[in-house]
Amino acid sequence: QVHLEESGGGLVQPGGSLRLSCVASGSIFRLFNMGWYRQTPGKERELVATNTSAGSTNYADSLKGRFTISRDNAKNTVYLQMNSLKPEDTAVYYCNAQNRLSYEIASWGKGTLVTVSS
Image (cartoon, rainbow, N blue to C red; front, side, top):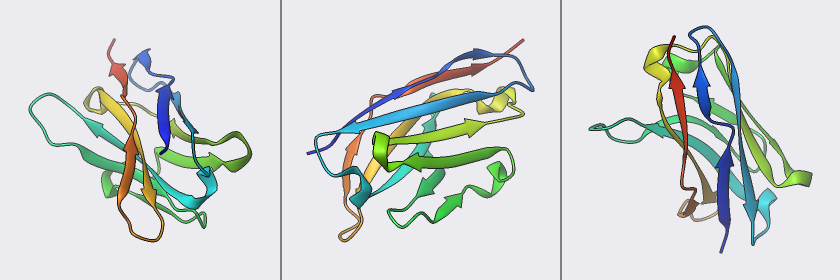
């Protein structure tokens, strides 16, 4: 069982930056594919970015160039660097851990709220 906890959300002005962190505990972090997703009220949760156990990354097309996912296996942490933030980036951001062999989602964090507003 892996437990995930996100942090780093908050209020930021348009054009600003934030870095989200997701710390994993309870299992072998390096064996999991990690992902960031986001959700706004009334909408489905959508993919932001993923980082596989092998270090490959994938992004939602609309976010390429502004968001960067990275991981530090020594710290059991996955990060999401968000730059040039827009009001439409306002959402609750969640991280998840995916079994790299079965592709089953092992866990979701509780989320961290990002609000982009002047």
